[in-house]
Length: 280
Image (cartoon, rainbow, N blue to C red; front, top):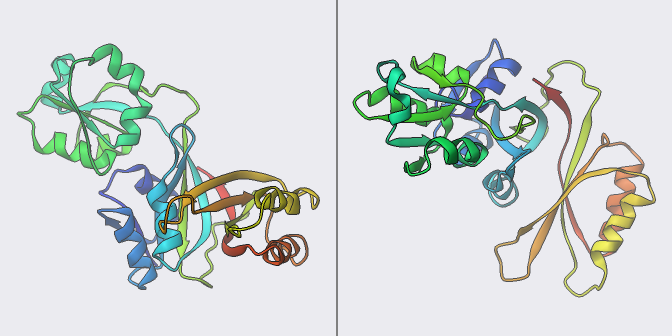
C-alpha cells in the first residue's frame, strides 16, 4: 500500500505511520489538505493526519477539511505520546543557550511555553509547517544560531543534537492521529479493545432546545460521549455543526436508533467513521 502522512520525514505523523505501516511505502506531503486530497483522489491508500492534541485541542483544519472538502472516512486512530526536545546543529551544541531563533510547529511552541519563557524569553520564535520542517531548517542552516523543537525521530533523521530533552510543559501530552481512507476501504492493524464512532451533526435552525434533545438521544441509550465540539458551518454567523465522538462501535440497534431519532428531530447526521483506537 501507499500511505501518505504530514511530512517531511521525522514528524510525529511519520512516527505514527512507521508504527502502523512498517512494511508499506510511506509518502510525505507538505500539508494536511494535500495529504487528504491524495487519499480522496486515490493516489494513496490511506492518509495519516493529526486530529487532536491533549494540550492544544482539536486540529481544526483536519476536521474542517474532512467535513467540507475531502470525501473520506476515519478508518482508525492512533494515540501517540508527544515528547519534545530542543534540537540544535552539532556545531552549536556547546552554545545552544545563545540561540537567536527558536522554530517549530505552532502547537509544539505552545506545548513548550514554560521552557521557552524561562530560557529564551527575548528570543523570537518562528512557526513552521511541522516540527520536522523546523529540524530540517536547523540542519540546512548551520551558520544560523537556531534551535528546533521536535522529536527524537527528527533528531536522528536530520543529524541534530539534543541540547535539552523533554522540554514540554506537561508530562501527559498525546496526539491523536486519524487514518483516513476512501469510503468502504478497510484496514486492519490487529485487535483493539477500544472503538469509537464519530458523527457530524447539524441542528435545525428553528427548534429551541435542539442540542439538549440531541444529547438525550444518546443519554437514555447509555451511549457515552467522549467529545462534543462545535465548528462553524462557514455559511454565516451563528451557524455551526457538531462533532460527536461515541465510545461505542457502530452496531445494528443503538447508534442507528439514535441517528434515526436525531433525523426525526430535523437534524442532519453524517457518519464520519466507526473505528478502532491504537496506542503507540
